[in-house]
Image (cartoon, rainbow, N blue to C red; front, side, top):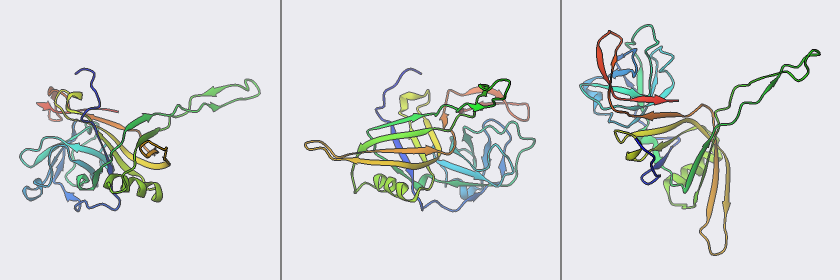
Length: 246
């Protein structure tokens, strides 16, 4: 891979309430990296590569309540891109997968910037050393956006809803094809709450807006890489189709 431009980059925002189908019951989740999900033949057609899904009810801490993207489906099974369940003691035979792809609307912006907030130092001063400090936990950060109002655009309308209802939403950046070796990559902000908004009208210029999302959790980079050989949980070699960076 090499440096890339933003040409072809898109931004997507979750609708609330959305139109996602009901959670799909899966028959297996492997304790591997990435975890692979098996669903029934009738449910298999509900998933395609790149779909954004959430897992629940497996009893696996590395999967439950987390969002992933779907790897290339085959034979009623697909990988959860970005997952790592290799530390789980056993595979799961129950759980659900909810496909949020139907909920996502394109949010047209002129710029988007992620910033992780520095950890605040914690004072542990005593009479022996009043200035003593220890490092605090870094905050998840913020995402700032700028753009131009279009009151008819579904994405802008949803952003305005987000500003008003203050409910956390999934915010997703889909990277351009040249950003990864396989042409697939996502930066996922699983819990983004719109906490700032402003509009500007300047004579002779396009009307613009600024916005800010406060993140409840750290972002996740879901980048598909060239397949590598690795050992699965049975000791056999398998093809790894995705790697995540968080």
